[in-house]
Length: 390
Image (cartoon, rainbow, N blue to C red; front, side, top):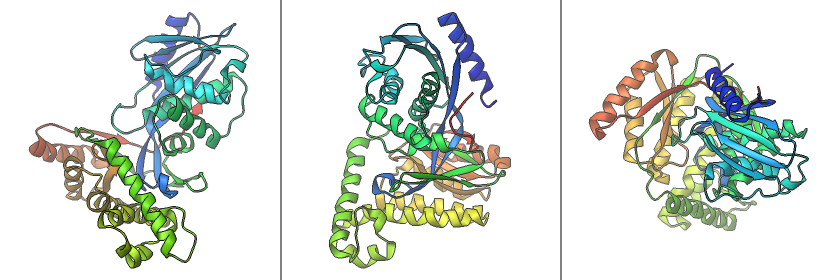
């Protein structure tokens, strides 16, 4: 089993805290975003992958309506009942779990026939943009659905986790993180279509790996910067709807050729923001064709193009992320590199030859340290199986 040592530690801690073995254990992985940046709210396409690190959730039923939840890393326990499930102001880590429980019962957790005692433990590095919160929601959902005999399909489970994040954790995320965790497959990417909320897996072959390089850049002004870019995309979509002779509701409906022809009617900044998701959608579609031919180098070139678009048009990169991508370009064993996730800090995702991982990490660390005085964190990631019961 992947991450066996985390599983063993969780089961031992569960027995110590609750005096019995768990009846159900589930697992859900984190995710990386590979291509398709800021396309989810533009109803576009994304390539992502489930990673080989994740979170386990262990649970056993209680005889009454009492519930207990322990964070297995720092061994804090929150207690509540099926009737008192609500967003917590203290020990806020519980909100990802209680929110998922709440929406599994469609906002009426008091209708659950009994309570539960649960514990979670994972090995996803926090703050690296690998979506540990979605992994926690998905393993919670799987374990509790099994405990209560509920049959929930993958997309519905992803939406339950997203709703938990919106309403209990207070984070207005898209569906990418939860869907990637649910639909992941070994050696494959998840291709998401956010117009239809449909998801498919596309094989990359066994000889490929990614490297996540976590910068130490502080996320600056993220909320305001994110909101302003989203607004610019919506404004641009409205403009294109008024000038194109076809239905346009989101930038998904606009081609690069149409942007070139009609960009003059937009302010310079709005035009620059709009071209990024338009280009990203076209890169994902092209990327799927390249993967079908097994052309990883050409797929990697699209990742470099994606980063240049982030750097120059969407302006959601920063000098630390740019330095990582520039260092990667000097190495033939790196096929592609780009920022991953929202940007403005966080991590870069590199498509690499896994045999050269040590060489790549050493080169990027040396270049980064020369520029910024500290070292990035490099970790090799293999696209892996999605969420499942253990």
